[in-house]
Picture 1 (cartoon, rainbow, N blue to C red):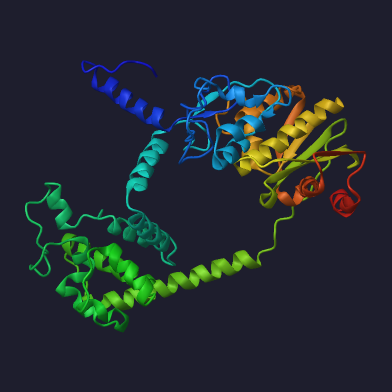
Picture 2 (cartoon, rainbow, N blue to C red):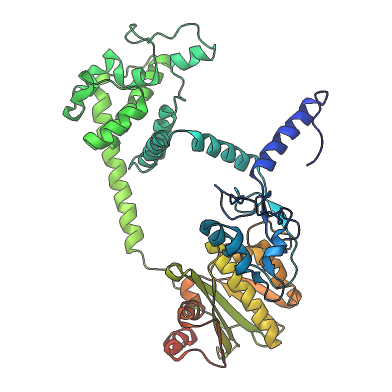
Length: 462
């Protein structure tokens, strides 16, 4: 990462150095012990927009590390220091970073991918995000509104894709082919009067008048002009809400245009409207039937199952209380007869992502079972992402990876298996997590759960 630039390097080497620029620009530290992270210079805050401290450097503390902001006794953030150094927004971000009581190494990660690892695709998205961020807010808002409208249309996916490409000027009309030096001239083959742009090919061409003029909702075509397809679609969306029909007609116009170029078959222009209307009706009716079937289909039965003989099952879950900036962790330990051996509810600081909530619950379950001295057990939760991370033997660079790795060191993983269950089969742990709203810190029940959860427990047991 510290190699010097060289003009005499190969093309491959120059490409690697360019990629390094992207990495250095977007990479962020995942806080473990904090000893490797410079408070003022490094990116370590859990924010994609402002990952670095913006507050002015405090004289005499120019070289402090993140480790210096952590109380070594309580292994929590030192409130006196962070409130003294940083603004309210930064304090809130810092306090949302979970800390682990045992030493964990700091890691440089890529925050634009859920796994924390860099990929070419995520690097491209990062650069595209920067371009959009630098554009005017109005331009970005209009594009966001348009893309949301296009992908929400009740039409076939091939038509959505066609409209999206048309909006990005990415279909092979003659104007685009001429710009790319594939054709020498770009005049429309049908009217012979204007350059064939995307808007011209499927909307403005005079030869298309028999189609568009036949539909009263599109009578504005003769009186109103548009800069491009995007402007047209947004106008129709707001004016008459006939976008579904319009885009199906556009697709059929484009299909007819291409068929006339490559085949000798007759494609009457008079058939475009009835073909489009019938295709739209058929598709929407079929979609309505599928949606109705999904709604009326019986829900999949999900139930908690006891572990095999000689083994325990530990279920965990988390619940978020945004109004008080806290989360609840719930853990329940049961034997093969479904009898409760122990349970807990704990309230902790709200971390910066929902995945971290589940990871903290899983870690608390592992530390709880280690404290009680149980060795052979099944750990079960309802977030598949966390269960897969627990099952993996590879190091995870995800925001929660270090927490799960540290928690697994507290038990003999050779005697543990990790399983996923849906929320309906994890009801006791979930309700314990919700109960943490009413708990000051930590509450543990030996061979029991809170009385109001007896009915939930009996449902599982039955």
